[in-house]
Length: 201
Image (cartoon, rainbow, N blue to C red; front, side):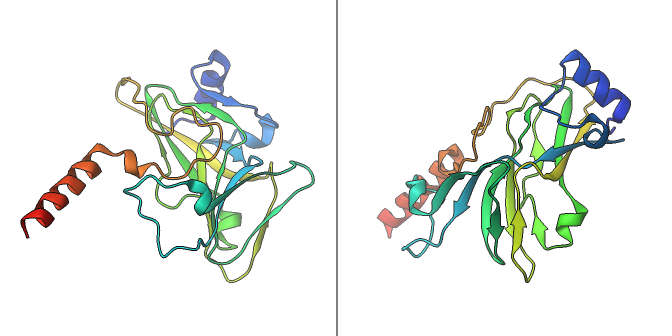
């Protein structure tokens, strides 16, 4: 069941749900969700002097990303067609243990070709931090973005019961972070199997 405005406000008031700061209660807290703003911290993906990125290996992010902190009232960032960057919510968020959070993009930005999450819109119960936006320009024209604009929305789905908190690789994130897929244990097992097969051939 999706949480509506009355329950969202109730949970915000009692601290069960944290979304901080909310700059404008009248416009940000809607009937079924809470609008989220773009923070000034971004991670831009550059075209590096290498053929590809191997997500199975830990690589220096500075080889293919550039971290920037924008001035919230002066700076903007232009996302060109085909560009990709990681950003985050201005709001610090904690999801209740009996809820699952969904990040949803804004229709007005989607109509410009902007996607706000590539494939991972979900926030697990107990997630704490600044959720990441995976911003990509799929349209034909560059799009100029400004910190503090409303860029997405948080929806909460109530679970049938409260669950234990599961800490992910990106728990307590305070700035956009590149992929940590190389930390997956099953990926290491696959690589070990591949090495064994190579040694037999």
